[in-house]
Amino acid sequence: MTDPFAPTPRDRFTFGLWTVGNPGADPFGSRVRPSISPVEIVQGLAKAGAYGVNLHDNDLVPFDASASERDRIVAEFQAALKDCGMKVPMATTNLFSHPVFRDGAFTASDPKVRAFALRKAKHAIELGVELGASTIVFWGGREGVESDAARDARDAIRWFRECLDYLGDWSQAQDYQLRFALEAKPNEPRGDIYLPTTGHMLHFIETLRNKDMCGVNPEVAHENMPGLSMVHAVAQAMEADKLFHIDLNAQRIGRYDQDLRFASEDLKGAFFLVRLLEGTGGYPRYEGMRHFDAHAYRTEDIDGVWDFARGCMRSYRILAEKAAAFDQDAEVQEILAANHADAEDIGALTAAYSTESDAALEALDLDPDALAARGHRYERLDQLAMEHIMGVRQG
Ligand code: GLT
Ligand code: MN
Ligand code: MN
Image 1 (cartoon, rainbow, N blue to C red):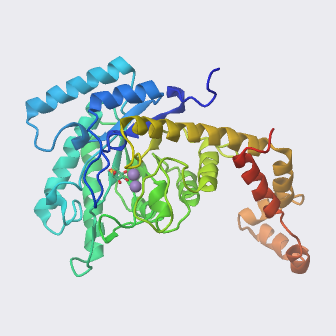
Image 2 (image 1 turned 45 degrees about the vertical axis):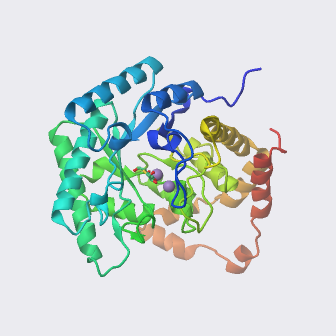
Image 3 (image 1 turned 60 degrees about the horizontal axis):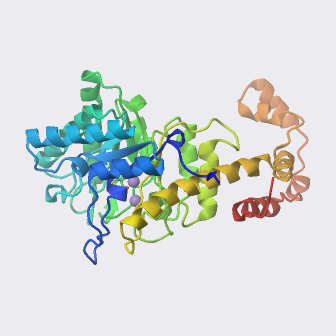
């Protein structure tokens, strides 16, 4: 029997080299798994049905590699990509591992560190372009402080902007056709990271010189850590045409960044997120990559890593099917239609001010008590969503 949820490259599933390649080290213990080489990761992901693989510069090329070593590694990687029919849609820069970034990269107090970070980011973009990437992610893991005595946050935000403006101008001068996707996180590894949520990033983007080429890369775990709604963050980004990339994983509220297998926590949140991306509830489907930024439990060996990768993709596909079924469910449609009914076309009237609409607004017969008396049946609606998720509601 063929597996109806087996992923295919058409699903546009991608993983980072750093995700399936994660050897299971944490702040309390060393690595538990051997390294999987970039070439083996490409082969394994292709076998599992992924579309592509994303990377940081140093996931592929060691920080201190010579120019000839770099070229050899890249050529070997390119050959594996070609053999396996795998793409590199996104590339990013590691601006957090090396001790030089202990006080930040683009927002470091020392201008020489900022210059070093800028130059490293340029070289990482060149690598990404060489590998065919069209999206460059910026995750400022070290862009923050433990103590605000260190610098004025306004300086940090300005330096961050200057670096992104510089990189945008530079990549346009190279004729690169790139989009920058900015990823927020509230804390960890810094005590506080600047621009902590997708909402903060969306505003910051509006202040950038090359704002049209900049969007966001929201991550489930990073919105959920402080208890925010990933669904709302992604919806706001989509509404602004700024969802350039997405990091799918799972997370329990209030914990360290867990980067768990997609949908393995907050199943309902994952369901509504997939529904949003697939567009079954309205609006166009998100056509970008479905990237998993997660890693296997530390308990796992290499086989467990591939169980993890397959699990991410299967859960997405299962939820996509359930979201479609939910939106086709007659009872769901009936409850939604009743709540959204607008027989008098009042939506058109409140959409924009004019002297006519204002007069019509004033003339409307609106009885707040009658409106307030009405129940919305969201208990039933949510239960229907739950029953679709739990697999007991068919059709
Ligand atoms: C790091 C981080 C992720 C970012 C990656 C991109 S690296 O693993 O935890 O959320 O997306 O820099
Ligand atoms: Mn991420
Ligand atoms: Mn994370």
